[in-house]
Image 1 (cartoon, rainbow over the protein chains, first blue to last red):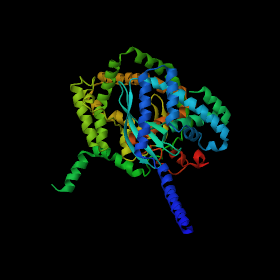
Image 2: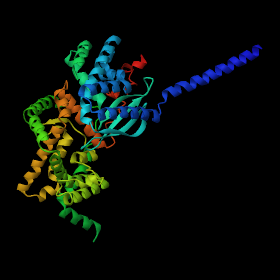
Image 3: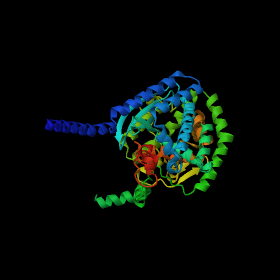
Image 4: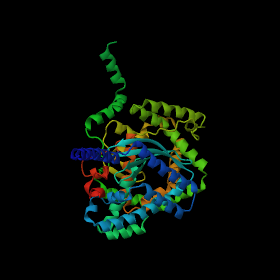
Length: 201
Length: 273
């Protein structure tokens, strides 16, 4: 009797161990298909917005929504602060991240009208270090096609992109330069930077 | 004829040509260093560059921008494209020379074929039927040739009229002026047509991408830093083809290591806290 319980408990414990060994492995391993799936959904949403030909204000809203859904906004915002991020409190970072979200939406949403009539096609995906790189082609009317690359990671808990490169120019490095310059102009004060971001874009 | 004798004749007859051909090899031998790490910027002339950048902005605001926006709005797109095609076609023999110097046989063949097709069926290069046949231009320049022969990028430069460049790219642009075999075949008055097409093509591009250029020059917190950042990233991507030199994650050492993976950086990683 007692022996049986022990054996059952042992069996259960073994099962739990096996499960524990499998679960984090699964959670960590972002597959090519998942990364590609994210970018395909993202691109379908982008194509729908540029095909809609809506007003600038509407496109800004659309882009902000897309950015929220598919990008790891907190990590992008934080990485744009660089090493300075360490100096600030969680509340300060949260307020800054919120302002950053609106700023990016306005800045890039405005530009969406230039892509009206164009589309993005997804090409290849390859694993790089801890993330996946999904490359695509932007096809515009009357323009030579150009390459876009999305860097996708699931470190946030689900697959999200954390950088977008257009012909080699990284949105994250570009914004890092911008945020760095703005922080300098505001005397290194994140409160003033946040206020400036709310007006910018 | 013995081999040394042949070589001696070759050297005495073609000394100048050989010297030019050997130049990249010499440069390669002198320079052990390669391109800077991605995200790394070599800008020892920053104070001067910044002043020149402000000058470029003033010129853009006063002349280039108004002229180019007017040009892009008044000249029909088809005419703009023909001017751009003509300019590209005229430069194509120089692409072929650079392709050969970079040992890119396929690119050299494609560009040579494009030149033949576009000069004849494309009415002197005004149209680009080769692109419609699925063979778009494969642009190359002497800056790329220097990169191929492992000449380092050098310092970042802000050059009057030209704009952002590097020591290597500026040297390349100057060399490209002498490299085009076609330029020697065209007499002086006709050459002004080519120069004019170049100016108009530049106006057209500035006008067409006005939104992008304006945002870079006039909406950036630091337009100098942003221009430098954009130029270097894009140029390194162009030169390395697949973008390897620009790989934002290839950099695992040094101060820019954080540019690589935002998730591995302890203070940049909210999940680590």
